[in-house]
Length: 606
Image 1 (spheres, rainbow, N blue to C red):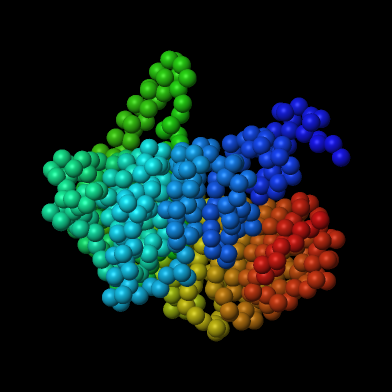
Image 2: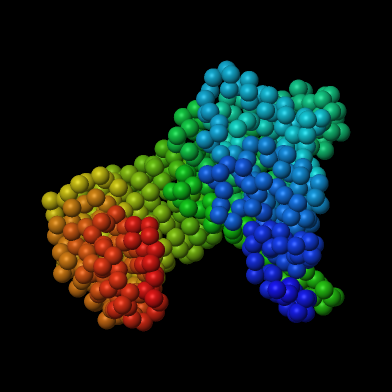
C-alpha cells in the first residue's frame, strides 16, 4: 500500500496529523523512518505544548506516554513545550532531561509528590531524612531540584508544588525564580517540624549558593521585590516572621490563600488578626482565602484561573504605533481605575474566612463596602449583633455571592436579615439545623431575596436518618422567581413540597439529594408529577437525583425521556434503575440528545 503522505500536499498532511494526540503521534512515528523524521514537524506546536509525566502507574492517565522515555518522544519535544506536570519523586531528573532536549521555554510547572509514597511521621528519623532531602534539593553539585529549576528562571511564571516531602526556603525559591507570577506550595506532614533559617529571618546563618556565608550585597539582592500576583500556602508556621517576610517582597500580590487542612494537627492555626497585617504589607491584595478548606470554599481553582486570565490580558501584543498608543491609553485608564478602587489598602473584593470569631474582619468589611463581591464564612460562631449590623447597616452594592458553611448563630431570626442584601445573586448555606422549624425559617428568609437571586444551595448537614415531619415553607422559596440553579441537600420534602419546585419559572438546573433520609412522604406519583410539570415549562436542562430509592424507579425514566429541554440527567445512590428502564429511555427520548449517568455509568439517548 503506498504511503498516503506522498499523495497529498504537505499542508493537508499537517492538518490531518494535528488531529492526533501525543500517544497516537508516538505510535505513528514507529511506522517507518520517514514518518519518524517528519511527524514532529507535521504535528505542530500545539500538540506538544502540554506534557504530563508520571512514574506512578496508578497516577498515569490513559494518554500518558511518559511511562518510559523513548527516542520518538524525545524527538517531538523542544521549545514548544510550555506546560509540564510531573508526578514522581525524582522530579529534578525529569527537568534535567527536558532541558537537555531544548525544553527551555517552560512557563508552567506542576510538581506533585504522591502521598502514598511518603510516610507522614514526626519522628526524629523523619526529620533527619527531611534534612538530607533539603541538602540534595539545594546542593548545586548534586543537581538538586532548585538548582535545576534555575535553568528555567527566565521563562517560568507558574509553579505549583503539592505534597512536598521536605521543608525548603520559600525566600530562596523566589530568588531562584524571579519571573514567577503564580506560586502554590503545599507540604506533607513530615516537613512542618523544621523551618528554613532564611524564611525565619536569621540571616546570620544563611549560606550562599556556594556554601559560604552571604555578604551584604547578596542579602540586599535577595530582598528585591517579586512579581507575584498569586500566592497559595498551606501553613502559617511562624506567621509574624516567616510569612510576613515573604509578603513584604510581594507588593503586587492580588491573591493570597492560606489553606487549612484539618487532618494536620501539628500545624498551628492561622492567626485571625494576621489578615490585617497581610493587607498592610500587600496594598494590592484584593482576594483573601484565610484558613479555609479549599474543597469547602471552591475558590482556589476559580482564583487561579482568574489570575492567569488577568496575566494573559495584560500581555497583549502591540504591532504598530497606533496599537501601542491605544494600548498605553487603555492601560493607563485601567491602572487609574484600579488605583481609585484600591485607595484603601484594607478594601478587598473577595474574602473567605474561617476562625473562632469574625471580630478581626470588622475593619476590613467596613472599608470594603464599595468593593466586596464575594463573602465566605466557614466553621465559626457569629455574634448576633455582628450579623445584624453586617446585613442591615453595611451597604455592599457589589456583593453578589454569599457562602455560610457550618456557621453557628445564637439568634434563630438570622435568615430574615438576609433580605436587606437584595443584590445577592448566589447563596450557598450548609448548616447543622435543629430540625424542620429551623429549615423553614431559612427557606422563608431566602424567599425574600426575590429580585436578583440566580443560584441557591441549601444543605442540612445534621445526620438525621428520618424526620418526624417535612418542610412546609418550600412555597416561600419560590418567591425568588429569578432562580436558575437550585440545590437542596438533606431537606425533608413531601409531594406538595416537591411540586412547589416546579413553580420556578426560570429553573434550568435542579439537584435534589435525600442524604440518607427515608423520604416516605415523596411517592413515585409525586416525583412523576414534578417531571411532567417541568416538561410543560420546557426550561430544565440538567437534573440530578441522589438517593430517593422509594420514588425513583424505571418508570420515572419514561417521563424524563419526554422532557425536550432536558440534556443532562444524573441518578446516584440508587439501585432501582435497570437496563430495561434505560432501553425504554433511549427509545422514547424526544428533543435534544440526552446524556444519562446512573451510579457513575454514562449512557446516551441515541
